[in-house]
Length: 130
Image (cartoon, rainbow, N blue to C red; front, side):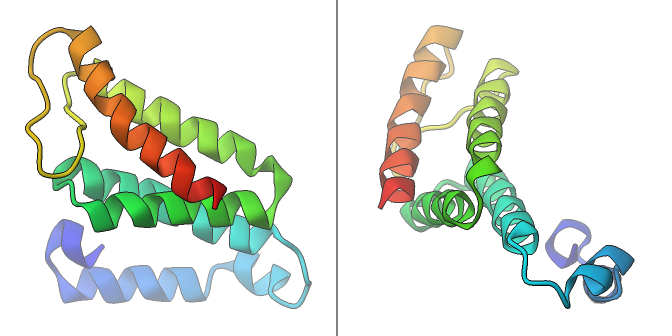
């Protein structure tokens, strides 16, 4: 929230809302895998967003790590992995560009943009599998 709205108050409000969320407080005494799945899934989508804004190799590898940790925390995270891939594909289909860090992804046809996005997708899958 701090980076989106450039306000320390927004960051503090988001942290307070997360810390005192009734669902988190109620389930914090239970040993379940739902909370780590939520954490790693949210981290994966945030890192995908950050990578789409400014692609770097570190963000791409952290995205793969977040997806891998989500998959390791609960089997139903397969849906999260698919959703990250579909979100990236939708971003490209709607005119966004995703490519390998340090390269300029093509701005032409959808097929060329999807082909350029396949490289980062393979790297994320390899890091997640480790």
